[in-house]
Amino acid sequence: MPEQIVIIGAGQAGVQAVQSLRAEGYTGAITMIGDEAYPPYQRPPLSKAYLLGSFARERLFLKPDAFYREAGCELILNTVVTAINRAAKKVTLGDGRTLSYDKLLLATGTRVRKLSCPGAELAGVHYLRDIADVDGLQNVFKAGTRIAIVGGGYIGLEVAAVGAKRGLDVTVFETADRLMARAVSKPVSTFFAEEHAAAGVKLNLNTSVEAFEGKEKIEGVRAGGIVHPADLVLVGIGVVPNDMLARESGLACQDGVIVDQNAMTADPSVFAAGDCTRHVGREGVEIRLECVQNAIDQAKHAALAMLGRPKTYSEVPWFWSDQYDLKLQIAGLARPTDQLVLRGDPKARKFAVFHLRDGAVAAVEAVNAAPEYLTGRKMIADHIKVLPEKLADLSIPMKQIAQG
Amino acid sequence: MPKITFIQPDGTEQTVEIAIGWSVMEGAVRSLVPGIDADCGGACACATCHVYVDPAWAAALPARSEMEETMLDFAQDARPNSRLSCQLRVTSDMDGLVVRVPTSQH
Ligand SMILES: Cc1cc2nc3c(=O)[nH]c(=O)nc-3n(C[C@H](O)[C@H](O)[C@H](O)COP(=O)(O)OP(=O)(O)OC[C@H]3O[C@@H](n4cnc5c(N)ncnc54)[C@H](O)[C@@H]3O)c2cc1C
Ligand code: FES
Image (cartoon, rainbow over all chains, first blue to last red; front, side, top):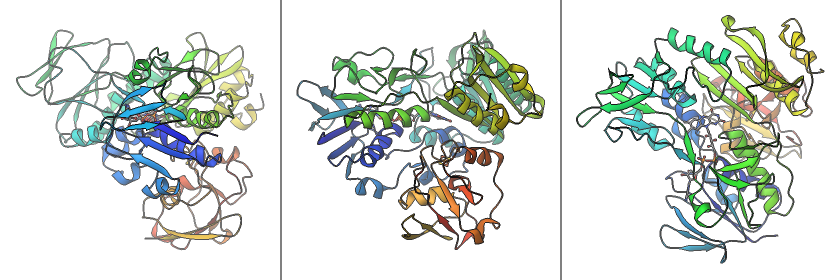
């Protein structure tokens, strides 16, 4: 058994590892270091209920302070880890301290991808990753304000929905020809585009932002050769994994820290979990996932592996997004070649798109359709084959369809 | 604040105060009630916040949503009085509520 476990990054994966290590009977020391001012918290509400103002800050925290005391986890906040010395099994902190480890977990997450167009440094250009970002945005997120959102992905669209609800004048710019193109199928993109338009959000697809205009502060966004006036910009164009520490210590990285199916790097003392990793997924393809499910499940597997009891990570990925009163829930990983089966009617604002591969359910996207989502998730895990006609038939309940 | 009592499989009782508007799960996690793992943080996606509501209370609580209903179909040892504590919003009427924590959430 190890005696000194050090966790870099105090987020969703880090806290899960602490919980799992103790649940699995680890009795040695745990130190978790985070560079934010706060103990681990949930990010999903940041672009949803927390931005809307209907969710108190203290509800964001994943655990109360007493959890860390009782778990005997030393939590070092506001402190960055600057280097890993794998030969000496030590990490160096920003304040100059060094800590020794038997096993090291990298749970460093991601950071936002920044725009580099002219004007990108103007005041009024915001990003959204942490509590501090939302607090900064909140000050200027006022009814009547013109907000330009760069990026029609989850974050941009969740902010658009909250903005529309709070009376802001919202315009979205998206380079692709549809919304959430990387993550959802065409019917779902189309449905959400209609919903946003109905809420008064102006959507500009096939439109790349060329520059931000303004003297000191943002005054407009130049896109497609036209300047669109704006008081405020929110950029949501994706994230990049925090894999620099691993890279500098000589570990293999490629858009993420490379780990095997046990969350282990090539160094048997170093593990990684969550958004910062690239792993071989359950379908045998290398992937980097950015979701709570992966942070939780991979951290659980990392804990087991650190204790010498590795277990293959093969859970089905799942994700959700809240926009207006719509709950989009996704399970599995779709491929462009999948056969799409629509169940229900988008007009009813309650439907699901199933992705069949070799006759079995490989992914599901559900809008306000919990049974489809949850049953679909189970069918994906169990490789259940089903006929498309049956899946599309609303008169057959999902429970029955699950039997195949 | 409404007081809610959690009873462990071994009979140990713990009464915690939970703010109105919070979920029963959030209150349990905040007070470190054992056995409420709440892996998904209340997204109604994990069923590790499963509790059994005291029969005297079962009828007084708002009905399960379709989401909760389906999730419970997949939960270990679900019973007619099963609830997902992340889906139970605390109201003033819930003062005195008693729930039991299952032996295992997995
Ligand atoms: C606005 C927003 C909305 C989201 N919505 C959803 C959603 O609806 N559903 C969903 O499934 N997922 C959602 N996500 C994604 C989800 O939050 C992440 O997948 C999850 O937080 C990943 O957990 P993690 O522990 O890997 O990383 P994080 O939670 O990001 O934690 C990593 C921590 O490590 C710290 N760190 C990094 N480097 C160092 C260092 N060198 N030294 C010290 N500390 C360091 C970081 O500052 C950070 O605090 C959302 C994310 C955002 C930003
Ligand atoms: S916390 Fe996950 S379902 Fe309740």
